[in-house]
Image (cartoon, rainbow, N blue to C red; front, side):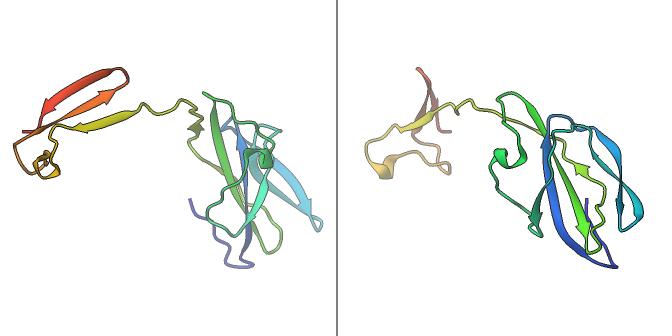
Amino acid sequence: YGFADFESGITRYEIAVSTSAALRQNSYSLSGVSYTSMIPVDAAARFVSVGLHLSTVQAPSVWGVILLAGTRYYVFVRAVNGAGITGDAVVSDGFVVDTTPPMAAVCVPQATNIVQNPSFESGVGGWAQSIGNGTRVRANT
């Protein structure tokens, strides 16, 4: 998606986070003129200005959201033009919070001399990969 306003330009982007990807129509008035835009259905989804930044890193508390493990969250982005008119929000396909640590894997050289260590280009030597409590050994061929 891209945002453009050739009359007054885009003055800022706003983002919100929600557990629902659904949008609803929102009507508002600006200087006596009525406008409508699409916003998240979730009333708790709070838009926060990120200025003209195309990426941002902010604590989830900025949006009033506590991220829970295993929950899918959706990010909404909308643009506001120089006249203060808010465009329709677009929504991501979501992300799931995963708090499980990665499984450690250790490669153990099979030769004591670094020159004799296996190489991906040669057919000599081998390597061992330790995953958790088990070890798998494979010849480098």
